[in-house]
Image (cartoon, rainbow, N blue to C red; front, side, top):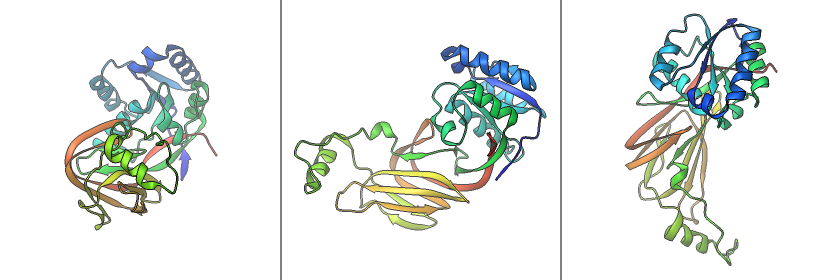
Length: 266
């Protein structure tokens, strides 16, 4: 559901990586925002200063100018201080921003800045883990860097799945032994190695879960869940743009409509 953005006063937080990587886009965003609203521009030089600036925003609506990591940082801080429910977040993507675009933020500094000024708030689901971490987009176990893409072996065909499986086992994609529980029910256990698990908020208080087995003879599991518990020996995971772990157990729950993002109307 979308609602109107409520404050005409903006706190524009320009991430240092954006200033260093694309100063022209930062300048354009700042000019458009300042021309359309009462904007206080802040230039934090560290994550600690970013947190202090955001915490002192008062009634101003926060606007993050930066990449996906900056957006996740802002949402994480607001969640940690239990301020997400009444504080909509805006973002002007500068840098790597595939997550922001997938959530409905337009590419380009001008279009994104205009959406901040003229858009509406869309309530979105959030994955929250048992250490109070959050996931806006996709959760991957193990991280993608540990699952290098597998070139198709010479001579492989649908009739020879054993050859692809052998390549995975010998060189490219290590098996991961995990117990995955969906809403309290075990759907795969430690004696059935998996290649990857992915979890993505899909709206209406549930997440889409995909479990890809290591064995070619076992079918993938595709389902929905409100809580996901993963247990294993020292596994790592990638939540949005950050790799975390190793941990032996982690539970994620879906928080329905937990945060608001300003996107173009309609």
